[in-house]
Image (cartoon, rainbow, N blue to C red; front, top):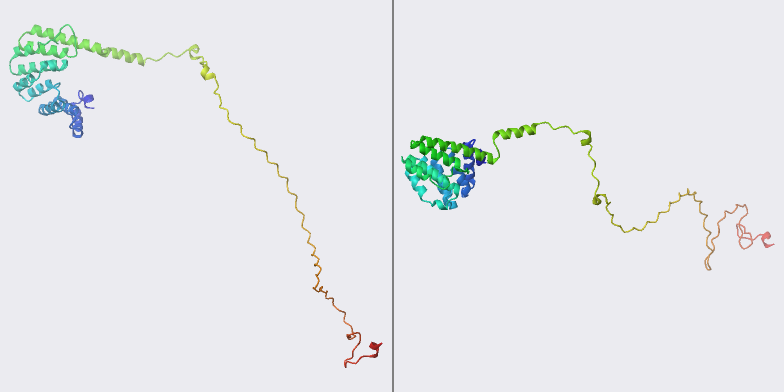
Amino acid sequence: MAARVIDEDPQLAHAHALAASRRAGRVAVVRETVAITAYAIEDYALALRELRTYRRISGRDDQIALMVDSERGVGRPDRAVEVGREVSRDDLPVHARVELAIAMSGARLDLGDPERALSELDIPELDPDRAFEWSPSLFQARATVLEELGRTEEAAEWHRRAVVAAEALDDAAGGTDEEILVVEEFYDAPEPEPTDAESAEPEPEPTDAESAEPEEEPTEPTEPTEPTEPTEPTEPTEPAEPAEPAEPAEPTEGEAEPAEAEPEPESDEPESGDGADETEDGEVTDEDER
């Protein structure tokens, strides 16, 4: 996030870098970012402290030029020259070696020694006929030293070369602003409406793979279930006839057959015993004897 806004808002970039350092203070790239953003807001003391921490954690010297410039920023050009001479330039990457030469030249100018400042810029990477990413800065630094020496014509020539190198790098990077505007106008142009012949696109013929119907996997035939016979409607049941009373079972031997008790007609004649009518006094009448 800090790298995205450092050119437009260095204060905001520095705030993001400080927030990251509070969470990951032992990460080298975080301390490097804090140093770069501090340098951008001209807090050279903080930048110098963070650069030393970054150098100790990472063991790298690729930010040595920024350390030299920070020493210049705090008013110690002599110390800046000492820091720059501590490292071997042959061990540095090309861009770091060029940046160190520019920083050392500035420190020599701060010390009032333009001749030695110019000699600091006499490096193999100073090629006026070719443009590299470091060429515009290197050409400008040489022009500044030549102005200090009073060699104005040479200074103007190196200023012109710096401009030409910057334009060449812009062209190689993807074009100028005018080319970007042309591209935007091209995309904003309305697209032509398709004609009837163009709009009627033939439908693509199905390929063999698409036209082939997917084969269905044969499923095992299931046994047909027997249809259930429809149940006949039940006829309304007739009311049951009252069951006849069961005939009494014939009595077995030894059992007396129950006699039906029939009501005897009442008679005025008195019952007789053993065929003879008895009177109330127990005497047998003549009729009985007969």
